[in-house]
Image (cartoon, rainbow, N blue to C red; front, side, top):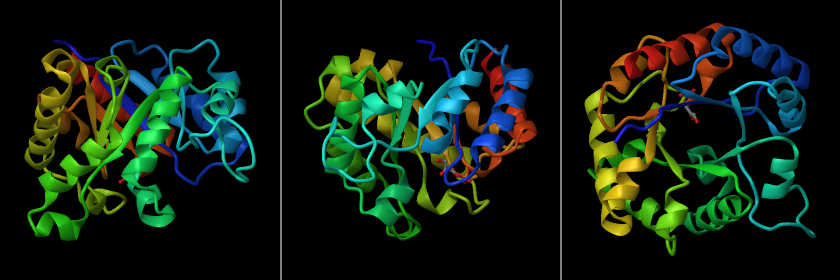
Length: 256
Ligand code: 13P
């Protein structure tokens, strides 16, 4: 089965509206015509609507970095799936390790958010990953298994088909310490096998599993050669048009 790779840029807490417009305008020019890679940019909430105006006539997709599961009401500071959709986004990152680490996000919360996002017709990218202490204690597989079971509890096969997963080892995020293709490939392979047990071979084979953690123009091609790595969730290197474009182009060449 061929899976169209995704290269998604997670801008985190960076870029004013004007800076976001400038970055996405350059990306459109540099990689807007690439068809064999799904390109996603995830600016902060404040820039979503302005960026969506730039992307109206483009295949580059727009994503949010988080979401809340309730639709409306007294939830100060939160943003619902339909507000994200209203701002022009089609994709949402859920359960990023920074949300888990700094904002006490739980697997149960990830589950509710992912359900809500699917219900709104948006595409979730659900993040999983172990810390350095967990890896050193040989707990990587166990941690990933627990995160998957929590995130996708009570999911139907139909729901699971719409999900993408990002494996982001916490120790590789923003550290310049990329997982080796073999380390990443091993976890990706485990994720696919594990989901195959719960949702069947066909669903698991169709799932896009992205790698995230210090992805750069010079390491993306090798990572993408791993059979179970279907793209990347890029942090720091997505803040610069030239670097992100280079990553997209390398992924596009490997995919041909
Ligand atoms: P870096 O690419 O900066 O390591 O960040 C990865 C990440 O967290 C993407 O979501």
